[in-house]
Image 1 (cartoon, helix red, strand yellow):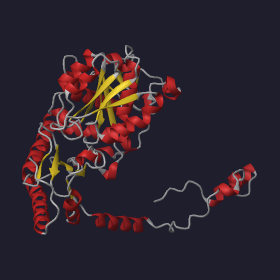
Image 2 (image 1 turned 180 degrees about the vertical axis):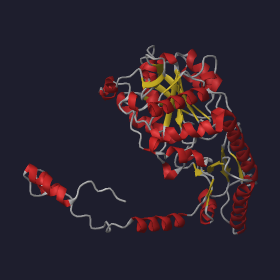
Image 3 (image 1 turned 45 degrees about the vertical axis):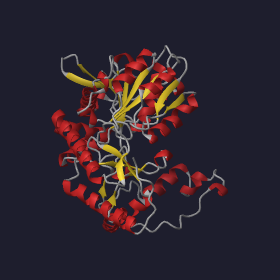
Length: 465
C-alpha cells in the first residue's frame, strides 16, 4: 500500500493555521520564468498490480544473457540466506549508528565487517565502508598525501593498469586540491607495471604509488618489488585489491618487506548483485599508524562499567565530517545495507569458501582462454592472471562480437575506448557461476561467427606472431 502521510483535510488545516490559501503560495518568491511547466510526458499513476506487470514484462524483454563481462563488477553466486537476512527489518531500515545505546546490533555487524576486511587484507584497521571502489581510491590518495609528512610534492604514481573508471574518478576528486596523478605506462608484453619503468622516478619526491592486484587486465603485478621500491623512495603504497582474489593471493599487508600502507577496493564481489551497476560499496584498510587520517566511520569494541561488551563509533567526532578542508573526509557515505550483505556473505562462506570461489574463478577463466584461442584469437599478455584475461583478435572486433549479442551473449569488455592501442582486444571474465556448458556456448558461437566472416571474405589483419 502507498504511504500518503497527509489527507486533503490535513493539508487544508495546516494551510489555515499559517494563513495560506494554497501550497503554491509558499513558493511565490520563485519567479514564474524559473518554474517548470506541467510534466506532460509523465503518464498517469498506475496501481501496484499494474506496475508489477509492467516491470515483469520489461525484465522478460531484457532476457538473462550469458555474461562474460567483468571489468570491476562480477557475477558471483550469492547464497539465498544473504539477502533473506539483509532484508529483515532490523537491518533493512537501520539508520547510521550515531546513538550507540540504540544501535548495538548495527555497530556489532560493522565491527565484524571491519574485522573480516582486515583479515582478508592483512592490515591493522578498517573503516565502515565508502561509496564505491573508485571513490575509495580517491580517498586513499587524499589520505596518503595527509599521511606522508616527508613528501611535499603531492605527486601520486598511478599506473595505467589501474581500472580506468578509478583513475578518472580519482582525477575528478583530487585534481582541484593540487594533487598530481602521474601516469605510469604498462609493459606491452606482460600487461603489468614493470619496476624498471618506476626506476625512472628514482630519487624524486613521490607521495604514494598505487598498485592494483590483479590489475584491470586481470594480470598479476609484481607487488613485492613495487612495494619495496616505493618505500625505498619514501613513498607510501596504496593497494587496490579484489576481495575474492585476496582469499588466494598474498594480501597487501604482506607485500614486500613492510606491506602496503593503505588498501582500498570494491566490495561488490562479496554478496552484492550486479543490479544494473549499483549500488555497490568501497572498503578501506590501513596501518594502525594512519588510523586517524582514515576517512569514514570506524567502529570500536569496548566494555561498559558492568563489564559487558559494547560497540561504538570511535576516534572521530561526528562534527569532523563537516569541517570542510580540515576534515579527513567531506564524504563519508556508509553503504550500510551492502556492508551487511558482505558481512553475512563472508561469514557464510568463511575463508575456505572464499578460497574455493577464487580457485573456481581462476580455473574457469583459464579454461575459457583455452577454448577461445585459435588462429584468429590469442591471449594478448604473457603474464599470470586471475579471473580475467585480455584476448586479441586479428578480425574486426566489433564485427566479430555483434552477432553474439543477438544470441543473448555478453562476450566481454572491449578495451578500445579506454586503451586505443588495444582496439583489437577484449577483456573476458569467467567466475565460479560459469559451467563447462556455458564456456562451450561462448566458444561455439564465436567459432561460427569467425567461420562465417572468414568464409565471406571479411577483412582480416595479419596473423599475430
